[in-house]
Image (cartoon, rainbow, N blue to C red):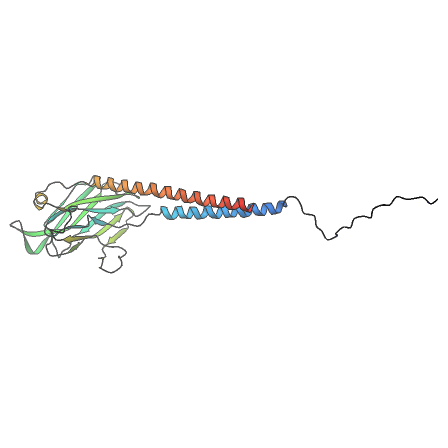
Length: 276
């Protein structure tokens, strides 16, 4: 009898072109993804940092007169507000020239702690009549000089004056000013603004004059009181109000910046999770 041999199944066919797929991505792929996420995070951080720097740069200010208007023919208490715009120097001197075409016989400065003030007068070509008296000289210039450090970086100072009588027919007065820093730099605020034209680079302080029935109560004062020499309101209250407003603005700005940074970081992390 012939022996019966058990049959063996034929070997299964194999695909020589098939490439096994690993269960997890190679380490190089994971590293590449991590590097891409890191670059995106770094880019977002740089963008947020740039936004912070942009928001933290203060807008340049200039010497100004406040309040910005007063009553024609009356007396007023005005303040020359001087911000320090330099990071490496203090403001140590302020010179304010009065308009020769509109002379004023009464200019009384209020003392400012830490500053010496000098009022310079000159003879008038044509005498003026004021309260029944003949005036032969008027103020040409007022100069404040610091005893110590003056106005430091990041600060401002107000210099109050009681002035009058203001002209009755003029609609504005231009006060040209020179601001001197501790490094001997002099900034000349002498360019007169023109209506309808862009603001000049170094504008002179301008006081707008309005008729009595249109004048506000901020800068105009009772003529008899000022002429009698009553004290003008000090700069401390104004400075405090400005400081409070500035602090509020800085706090709100900081909150907004922090919220923006958090939003950018959240978006980057969410994108990273999706790509993973």
